Length: 300
Image (cartoon, rainbow, N blue to C red):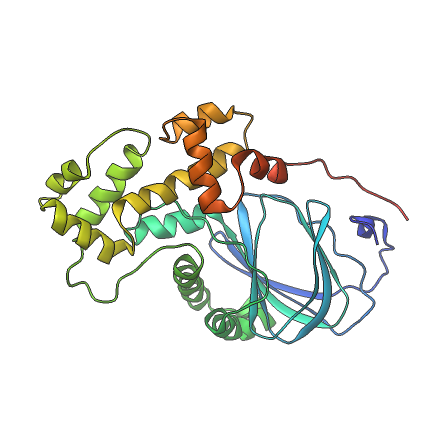
């Protein structure tokens, strides 16, 4: 069946049951059906957000399209999770009964959460399909009574569950690190100063020793404390931040050489080597695969 064929389906066709609640900018939706004859769902509108989908029961069969290309066909087990970046276009055809809870989270909400937690890192979640995640499954289960009766949902409870989901997702799939034991870590003011400095100087030449001095620490102690606080060295943090910025700029019509300079690389070839090592494909290929395309509606 062709992508976007659902747009032409009769309005009387069977549909899944959908119930939603909101926690600030985050929308949580439960979608379920016991039917085998559902039509393809309409293509999800693109937005600066991502979906986190938790399967509440075994889901035997579906097809998933990304930018009009079939990228997955099969099922997911109960308590598994999928993350889709909605800056790309996705469409799903449910071929068997299913029950899932979807967290629609704007990137701005994740970034704001990281900043409020004292983490100024540039946050982007990894795209996964069918990964077992008992934590998100438990949080989704806790929300089922609220989703059954959205009009009687406790707003504070829903908000707290959403914050717990953000904390888990940012660590498990976003690369953030929240140390349990504060011994040997940077103080909160040093963490803020360090991340603000790195963000402000990510495309400039600077010395980590200068940053350590601003934090009133020796360079060796600063490096150790930074790693305890963030789970990586300052240079690693900077590399990941630069790659994230490159990803964003590749969505624009900007020459690769200019992106390289703006993101702090010596030249285009330097950026290409680092980006390829980190992402698994060259910037030009990544741009080609992820360039927005017009939606083409097809009829039978």
